[in-house]
Image (tube, rainbow, N blue to C red; front, side):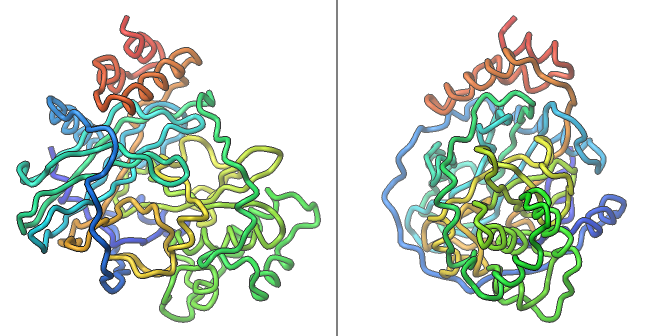
Length: 409
């Protein structure tokens, strides 16, 4: 199996505009861009609450998922089915005290159902435990607690995720809070309001507004190095290559016209390795409608297979976006693929932060199979232990195989 580090990596918050992405799909390399912020002190916390993850016997599963992802050529996922997702970080423990690092993982939401999840830590004795924990806005995260030995530690995870048309876990998040301005989504700014008025469509439809926002962002020209990734910061720089900034701007424009909007952390199943991607969702007609301001996928609404959802940003996440955080540029809401929770950690190495997702099998799972998978994942969140049926279902090639395996037949 090809080692993950063998693939070219990008620096945090590097994002692909649609044209650049299409070029990358045909390119043997992926360019890198550094966006590291000055280190900030993070207060140490008490041992995390949550469910301890049972990792015994899962290394073979993680390696198998990684092997399947690595075997997929660079290509877009084109339909529902099973996607493989991986991510990881390399950190240096700087202090002789227990340290904690938080990972965003695939969420159980809408038509997305995680099937399996496996972590690996190298060196193994650097890990105290892994815990499933509740993050902001109902997002589930994994907190890794490390020993007090100063050393480099590599942490990787792999997951198989079902994407389907069946909405087994509807997102009931209230939309009203996402009308408010925030430190990184400055919807009350005169500059944002003026641009929103210019882009608002004659139809008055949010979907047409979203399309106009996509076209405007695609046409932006970089005038200077971005100093922050908030909506005003990206308008000042004109740089449209950073998805977090594009999504902050899209949310600000939507809110300026009275349309609730939030940003979403995802991994697109493209077979490309980079830090992560951030898209947006606006509320319309009592539902959340996803779209990609960076136009990696231009369809509105975006399809269920366009991104493996890792986190849905809350207003609380946005409130800390302009505050200094380790290895994070100003303007980035909380809920990145990795958050350093204690002050004695530092991201390090060329593979210090990365993720990748790829299509494994394309099929439409039945409603009852999707429901069975969702129930199995809920049991995992309660117990920290995967069932054999989940491990077997993750390798299914057809809807019939998936249904039989997830039901234990």
